[in-house]
Amino acid sequence: MSSTSEPRPAVDAGTLALARLVERTTAEGPGERTALWVQGCTIHCAGCFNPHLWTFRGGTPTPTAQVLTRVLAAGTEGLTLLGGEPFDHAAPLAVIAAGVRAAGRSVLTFSGYTTAQLNRAVHDGRGDVAALLDATDLLIAGPYVAALVDRDRPWAGSTNQEYVHRGDRIPPSAVAATPDRLEITVGADGTLAVNGWADDETLDALLHDLGRPGRPARTR
Image 1 (cartoon, helix red, strand yellow):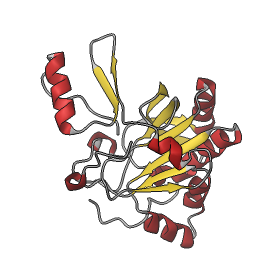
Image 2 (spheres, one colour):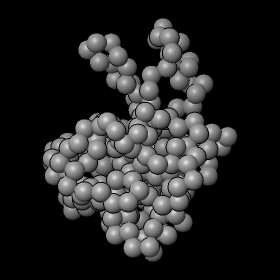
Image 3 (cartoon, rainbow, N blue to C red):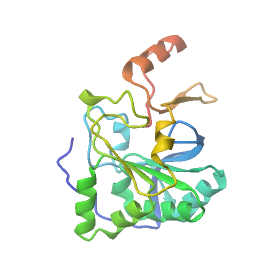
Image 4 (cartoon, helix red, strand yellow):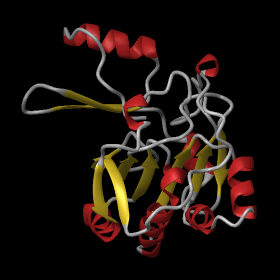
């Protein structure tokens, strides 16, 4: 894991480095949700599922307002923010998350930063971090630790990660009632895209059954 202690400094709130957007999924939080992955992360957890999303080069620079329009048009119960590292893109994501909550929907945000690190950033004057926290109903925070794989709670990768309920739209009962899920999308060219959570053994068994060598990139 990187030694960085606070999120990357704020960037232009009007543009988001968009890596992927799935309009409808039941694998990234309670109910049917829209999921958004950002391009770029400064944390670099060992065993990260998405090392291809560490670099800030790449992704698709997309107007924040356009992303919000796509999210709202999907008509799902809420939005899940993943990466990459959402709080390294706090300024544009705060705008999107606030728009989603204003429409009466929920926001779930994953972060490799601990709550202590995020709170310290807010204390140090990071208004963008504060705004994204304020627009988040459920925060799952903390670095992924491969030696502490979480086989009980949904969505989290490792047992050290914290679930912080910051609003009433994703209550603890919704977490308890939702199992982990894994979604696989087969493209027209035969490529596989995977999102959701499964441990390495499950993924390996799945790919063996599919008769595919290697492993597709996961997106959480």
